[in-house]
Amino acid sequence: MGSQLVSTDAKNKLEDLSGITIPPGQNPYQAFITACRDDHAEIRALYSAHRTNRNEQQKAKFLSPDFKELAIDPFLLRIENPQIDPGFTDPRHCLVFWARPPDHVIRLATHLQTLLKNVAPNIWLMPQHRMHMTTLEVTHSKTPEEIAALVATMRSAIPYITSFTYSHRPRLVKPMISYDLSAFAVSFLPADGGGDAYTYHHLRRDVFDLARSTGVAIESRYQVPSAHITLGRFLTDEDHRTPEQREAWVRAIDDINRWLEEEVWDDEGRGQFCGEWVVGQEKGLDARCGALWYGGGRTINLGQGF
Image (tube, rainbow, N blue to C red):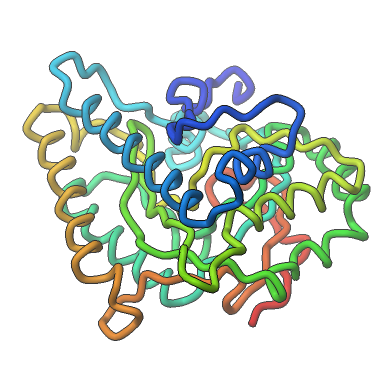
């Protein structure tokens, strides 16, 4: 029955709103970097444009008088409510490289979850120990046997890839809540200071090339300029049925984002929360496979942190 379900991705496509078109067949991350003339300030500007444009687009959907419904994930709904489809298991197995957030980023993300839960008590929240940022999705929606074959092909290269952040350390800054009709996340921008020429997008480019060099085809669903940790998803429309509820949701996100900008963005760790994340802090990349759509699956290899 699970294979007949339609993913929210198909209904709520994550399109690239940065304004750059990626030619087919290329490393999409290198194409993006080339389009930005390898200028880290321009790379950050386009990451910013993508998330700002997407939030404005999604706000309009929530506030539209023609609003129809949230994009509720039918797979997660069955996992969280087994009585809907007894015995259901997620058939979609994946292979990914995740960046695991360090403790101070988890504390910030958890605080943001609490603020959102205050306005929408019925949202589903990503457990702290499952929080992640997808650096590269190698493939998705495969059988366990297909994933096992890919892992066998890549296995000798995986330890090098997962520890790549020990010597390549991109910095992420300026967290902001990003959202759509199915989920909400905390997103970051690549830093563009004097020592930030190697951005998170460069890391994604290099991990793409390293993974592809093993002979495995990279079949990511999308390569948009986004660095985000999913905070949660919608499993019911109970908190968003009326225009007043949807207005309260949008207003709460705007208020949180204003607080982040004023209190967290330039605090540099002096206050209660720090919004800076050097990828590879505490843990290297996490090569992971299995039914991991909601932070599950199993670790093949966790790279060395610093």
